[in-house]
Image (cartoon, rainbow, N blue to C red; front, side, top):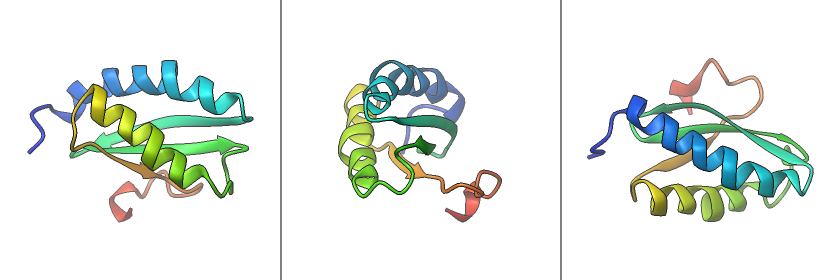
Length: 92
């Protein structure tokens, strides 16, 4: 059970994505956007060169999710939102 509300999680998650993850992805021509947090699931969307990149799912799982789990809470799960699914997060 997550000890934080989704609203409480948003600022620290956004901070880590903006300050640690986004600059790393930008070096490879990619970008990442935090869309929402629901029940400890962090919904992000990859942009730029990350779209369709074979290593993007590994980057999300082993870099972004790991960073969030270590810094904030070990049960956080990252979910990549495909283009066009921004309004259908509950389906992911």
